[in-house]
Length: 273
Image (cartoon, rainbow, N blue to C red):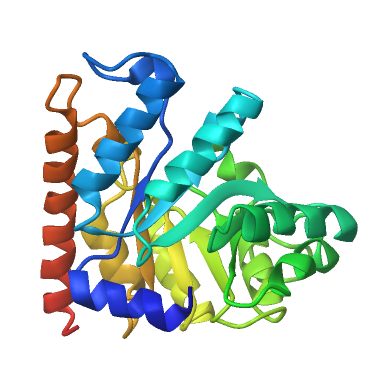
């Protein structure tokens, strides 16, 4: 999927919602078996209820990998439920020396046909380069994350530079590719910093977790970081998946997705998009 395709979907749906399929067996609602069959039934119904409002879906691979071979099969089956016009993200946070990264890239881009994968930049350019060599695929690099521990490293000043580590990461990684193949993960819980990040990378898409359950503000993040093409994929996982624990869980998920999309549409209108 190309950047232009994502932009076209955002304009068509008036939404930049990414729905996260971080499904937990123990949180499946009433009436759903807590088995692989139940998990797949749940995912399929969630996708059908949210597809109208979602331009992207993010599958956190750890939630499936924990079950071994069967979990991988469930992940592949879930991937097959996603509409062809949506952007499909493997939230796998990979990153290793060249040959290993090549194998990771083949697994997620060739074997499973995801459009994008999240990666860690810690091991440097040769760990990301293999992912960047795939045509019409995106590398989504961790930059400023939404978890509490981000301050352990990401906001530390780089010695002899007036930059924080995440700024150095963004400046460096953005030179390895272009906005048609690179995105960055930027957490919504630090909206005041995200505006500064947008100045560093005006044309790249940002994948933004942390809205909703983690306390991030959709309005704040949009006003701080939207560009002329919107340039944002704002993720919601728990807020949509577990909007209800009853048999109406799919309807409730659809309502929650519609609510977020409606707010996004309003914000796009405010910003003249």
